[in-house]
Length: 174
Image 1 (cartoon, rainbow, N blue to C red):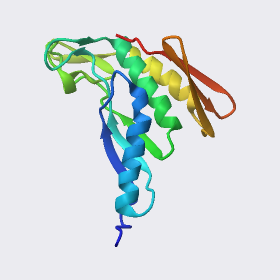
Image 2: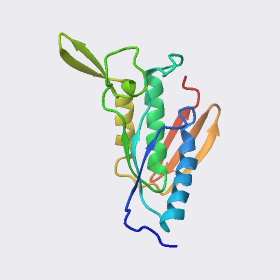
Image 3: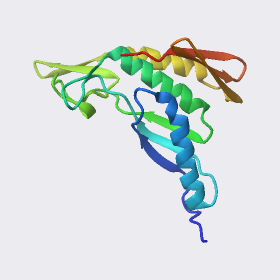
Image 4: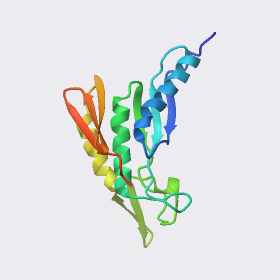
């Protein structure tokens, strides 16, 4: 068959598995299989949008807290860093899109809360900003050679072998 070699990257939006971010590895492997099947060779993957909301879900039921957002986004970043084939990952969204506390989904994905008083917008960092900054500082400039994982109680010890970086997180975040 003839392959399309004009595509140099594959961009995806990744909004899946909030309760189990570790499934990203399996999901990316499926994406890579589709690329290989249709392109005839591997292509770098850019995750051009991924995120996690704070506030109520679209049904108004479950409430995601700021610490849930920080936990999930840093787990995603570590897993994306270690995943073979992911070249870039971009977080959606810099700031919430509305000051409406009853807004759902896309309006609450921001890393910053917004407020509007007397026609002036102000922003305040959510907990995820510091967590993401710490994760990026930890991983910046490193190249993963190998990844290892083992269950430890209710959490997972996730080791990215570069020199030696160990990450641990608790699975019960809500």
